[in-house]
Image (cartoon, rainbow, N blue to C red; front, top):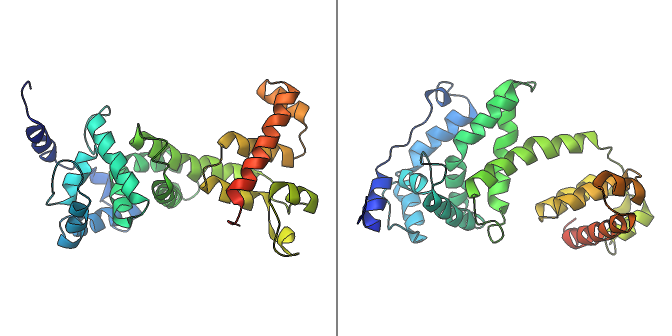
Amino acid sequence: MLGMTQQQTQLQTDQHQLVWSPGLKQRPNSPVAKLIKEWELISTRHKEVDVVNSWQLPGGNVSSLDQVLVRAGFNTARDDSNGDNYLWLLVKQASNEELAARIVLQRILPPLVSIARRRGRIMQGGVDAALSEVLPSAWTVIRQYPWHRRPNKVASNLVLDSEYFAFVQANRAKKVKVFAVEPHLLSELIAEPETDEFGQEVTLESLLTVAISQDIDPRHVEILRAVASGQTAATIAKHYGIAERTARAWRAQAISELRVRTRCSV
């Protein structure tokens, strides 16, 4: 409406009701029902509300965490840019504040459940098994989200990243043969192992797990796995449709980044 003030707009947003699918609460022992029950306990508790108000987020103080969810885009339009900006501020806060991460998890819970339902159709253990994969993945994604590099489409990014790391990346890791890194290759991948036993304990996947948590370029992960599996520069070049010289450069860049990402972390 023309002439509506920002305060009026915020009041209208806060008056939106949280709507949880009835199916989410039908099974009281499911992880989702437990999360919703926990949310209902903390959403109006003074301790949590006071912490959130201390962050001085846009829109003024809240009296319930439900208001925070709605301001962050819960149950609003997909193109709600104000909600996305507010969610970005929460994710930024979540890197240091566990409560902020908990709020963000609740914000993206419906799409995570949709993923679990879809994945559960083809997984042993069904929906609950899928939830046990995607919820921990989402928590990690939220706490480690690179907010400084990805300020837009935050909700979509969180959901897509959660599904990727829970199912796609995890399945690829299972399919890749895990092997101890040979000493000569290890010396190329990381700098100065501290003990003689270090090389016997390190696997490529353990290095990549650390590197992924440090935001290594996903393409470099694929290149490193290809190199470790014995693929030549020619094979890699053919796969990506690039020149062999470029493939060799990519390999060098991937190894260099792996060394940086895993230094003092393994």
